[in-house]
Image (spheres, rainbow, N blue to C red):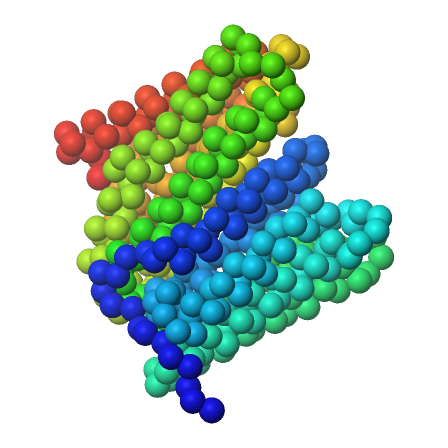
Length: 387
């Protein structure tokens, strides 16, 4: 058989339109995760488990598309197949921990799609590695020893009686996280061919999460007539999303891309693992959890209080995100951002206080804290006080 065609990426390559098409599925995925979380405080854990599974599928193809161009030959077919498969997986997210009567088994559909996408990724990565024996070995050691056992644990969790699924799925997620990190010590045999592509790719997934924040405003206001309180709350919710955008894109995204692009070889691969694969996980997850808080705030305007779930989602999620941003900057040689760390502490401290506050007031306070910190960080950086 003739070897399938692949075009390796080059330094300076940008994100392709096919990758953007692939990302559209994850807009839907994040919305589904937020919906799963909205059923109660305990469901936030369920949502995070499913989010972690989604994150590994997205990251897998971000690394692969950095190795070989996504819109050429075999890669194009693989990415289109993964897109369709992940869309089916997203349809099953609401049934992740509770299969509805009739139809296919929801959790099993999700696991099957996850396994197909991960195994397809491994197969194509081995082809893309070509004669690079170190990379081929790294793919087999890191991905095969993480994806296959994780998929097995997920399957067992579905097949065993009630009560086993949640803990086994949590173990599968943690196992995946630990194994890939440990087997990639020192950068392993991984290769990052285009620093610009890799940085841009992860900036775009942050934008997807922010898109979910905007969608959450509409979800919270659904089935309600447009009124002055709705308009005010919507404007404040958008201001919250703007604040997160400023904190990431005003300075941080450019800093990360610049410092990351200056690295080479194993050090670049190690930084890609730490900053983008691992630290962007809490950055994006925190924004998605914050979107749940926004949805709760808009939905509870008539109740006169935000509630525990809404307050901790809004403040806790965004606190996790901004602290992870500070850690990402630090990992690539910057100083610890006193402003971002302080904001994280303030948001966490405000959560119990805002639970009984008016939803619009909670949104206003959080938006002011985010935007104020972004402006202060930007000013401090240009004055040379913070890198």
